[in-house]
Amino acid sequence: MGRFSRNIQSLSLKAKLGIAVPTLSALLLLVVVISASQGPVGLPFVAVLGILLADLGIDAGAEYTQRAEIVVNQIRLPRIITAGLVGMSLAIAGTTLQGLFRNPMADPGIIGVSSGGALAGVIVIVTGAAASHVLVTPAAAFGGAMIAAFVVYGIGSIGGRFTLGILILAGVALSSLLSAVITFILLSTQNVDAIREILFWLTGGLDARLWLHVRIVIGPTLGGLVVIYAFARALNLMLLGEEGAQALGIRVHRVRQILLVVASLVTGVAVGVSGIIGFVGLIVPHMMRLVVGPDHRILLPVSALGGAIFLIVADTIARTVISPAELRVGVITAFVGAPFFILLLVRNRRRANLL
Image 1 (spheres, helix red, strand yellow):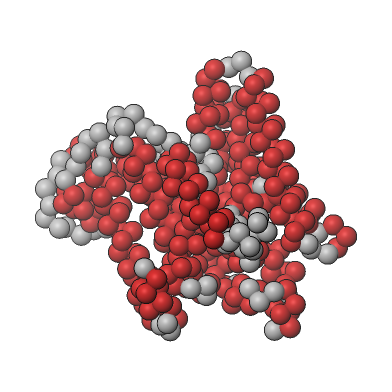
Image 2 (tube, helix red, strand yellow; image 1 turned 60 degrees about the horizontal axis):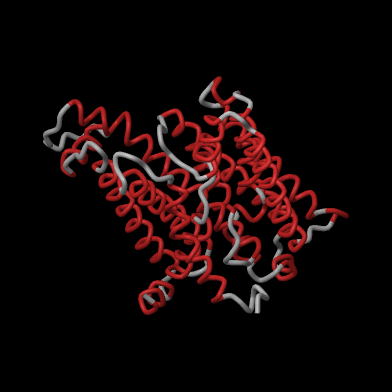
């Protein structure tokens, strides 16, 4: 792996893009087809591929039943695409925050965005508002995530000067506070159904996702990627430090504001449709960085594709490993992410000042 990574990193940016993006795109398509074939109703790979090609107007001559077409197009495909977009959103946000903070252990939860979305979702669930419309919970979670982001950034900018250390500490403190509020709500609620729904929300899941959820998340995710990618060069220069970036013409304060808002936006949208899914924004950017290097011009697109692949695979495992029952996808990502995070802490103990 180390030799392979060094060989990839020695290539030019154009060569890296020409190899990594098509390879990951092909892998993503393969994962989508495999995932769509898995479930209580098993479907042949060739039949699923034929259905998906037919959706694109291509007749591959594959044989499949109308029932199989309904299962793929109306049940599995919306969930798979939603999973891919959520994974993409979290990976984009994680890559951006790791670049801004110059810290490979940063992820969307570090600035309290996920906790803000979680609390807002819990409130609409416990008050019964979530039952009024399918969009209520996603809208509330998005609003909560954005409020949390602005609160933390406001604290980090007290006195008119942004301080990264204060922002991170404020994010950790706010996350702890909001988690305590969520715990209080859980302990105070007598409605067993609401408690069960809250616990499902807090562990993250993609069950019963519809094409409506795809439409909710696709615009902010792809739009956020485009905006952040426009600042890829600025992110690269900010790795040199604030003073170094300013000396090279980067308006650090403005760039940081824009990227924090966009990262919060894509995280809030992801939380709104899936609940809390941890570690995607931590694992994927770090793994992609090991392969393609720290240049955000290549790191951002490959992390986006890697995030989509990772979460689709995790969700496929979650819905099939104990079929016909399901695990929560947040449980799967935690099983993978927690050991990885511990390993990352050990490898970066000096930088994190833990030892």
